[in-house]
Image (cartoon, rainbow, N blue to C red):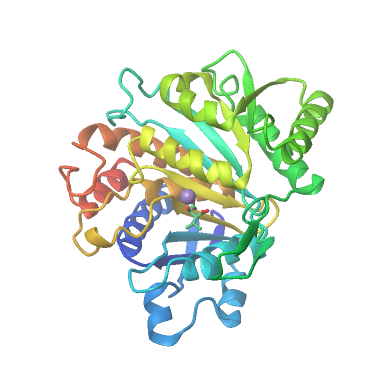
Length: 359
Ligand code: IPM
Ligand code: MN
């Protein structure tokens, strides 16, 4: 008998339920093939429920959510809910309260997927961003005074302490050691690049830079260390993505560069990520949003959600099944005309069927 895991499924809003449905379909195929069980509980959280009941994440639901081994999320956001309410009340609340301090975002171009970058293929676009996920500009330090007057002052601070920086860097070094280009047999080194702005944000990035070299020198001498400014990183992500292996950066910079990364790998329909607490409860999600205009049309791309399912299995230790799903994705993307909604040459459910069959 294989292992069994409790999974919280949060389909959310918009196209979330459609893509999560396909992820669950593919996960079921993996369960059958590899003999483990995912006991799934669906949580009705998101904009629809908020509009009906005023609930965002009630304590009772949160307590139930916490009983699970992992969370699979579709998307949250609703056209009739003021931006920020669900993001902060649900998504960020889960990240913060479950201390999911890593946001792991692979930037991988799958075979047959067209990148907007000319001349770069799956060999060149193949790296991972480790985004610090609970600190920095997202901490909420700051305030406003004299609001609405000509003297209004607003402040929002980038704050980090050594503890947050260190645990994020250690995760990134470990990740580079285990999953870097050398470990995967596709490069000479396992390389970790710190992405910062040491030339301007001299306090915060001095802390990051010192910790980076201290920890690297002491505990990860086998991992090659590099540093890039964040603006230059955006440039190189387009001109020389092959330079990158594993990148580590702050919450806000990571948010921004992973959207750029996502478009280079074929768009938000493909990009998956994991909000990880290495010793707690983690949450996996397609990076894309709710895509309101495609909702209910069976036209949205489920590859990102399916990829998030694979990352979840990897995290749970079902590494063979995770690899099988990734391979199944690699067999499916070349058959698709495009990764854009309604242009895939298949419906959402057909793409799910193809991946599930390949598993
Ligand atoms: C992301 C999103 C979130 C973030 C928003 C929805 C709060 O953009 O997951 O990247 O900023 O982290
Ligand atoms: Mn984002």
